[in-house]
Amino acid sequence: MTGISLKKTTTSLGHYDNVPAQTPAPDPEPENGDKDYARFNFICDKRFVKKIRVIARIEGVSIRNTIGKTLSEWLDKYEGKNGP
Image 1: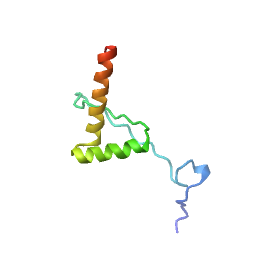
Image 2: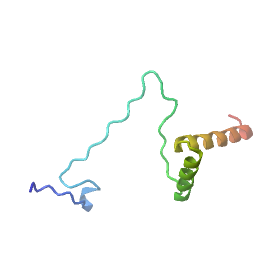
Image 3: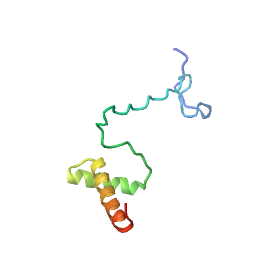
């Protein structure tokens, strides 16, 4: 037995005891701007997540494309009313 504990404690702040916390390296930005999207994380109602997953599955598209289409339609409507 090595004596390393894998039990989480309140003093370990979510990290396993005796294991140093490692910060992941940020994703490098493409040098030539190949990506036309950016990672965008947000919190929303669990009911929305379930429905979006079902809709994406039914439509045969990714969740990213489903949300992207929805945001695009909403932004077009907003900008049509308020300007760019």
